[in-house]
Length: 245
Image (cartoon, rainbow, N blue to C red; front, side, top):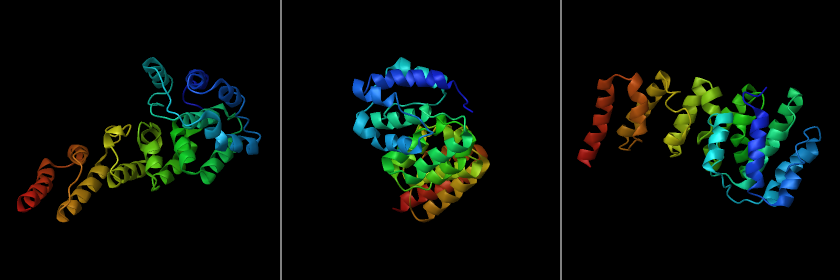
């Protein structure tokens, strides 16, 4: 059901949350998570900012290391209290009834506003039945909301671990199209593949023909699966353009 020690993660996050929100807010949050009461669960998810606030979470280096030990690749650095509170709420949900669990979480995705979507996509690495969320993750890549895309792409191990190759390649290309930081994408080098290299080289040729630049990481990703002579020839296209300009 979970590919990591859920109780250990709950305990670590509980400590971090208590250190970052008021005593009253923690007393409230610690009592939430009854997934059998869908209306109450949804209301708790929606009202999280009013209870926890939206302040940035402070986390000690050893706590960040412990989170990464429990769930490799999982990080909450840079998160706000409401984002973490929502993720913690989903972690609290009883996942024994798979059908109910999926229905309740999926409904949150369907009804979510921007900040709620950020929390939902941030939770993908720690949700139960990880294979159930592949389609939802792939659909999220088509979002035009920058913060939502960053929640999927940046420091999120789920896409690299579960997306099929076509969806993964779409994620990388969407990151390039939207000027995201490729170096923050978890698993970028490990999931590199020949088809992605082909797509990147086609993209480079199109950009070159239009007199536009490409990100340096493109060459890094394309080179392992592309003849060096072809890469150099396309690069030459750019140097020629710069010379003419």
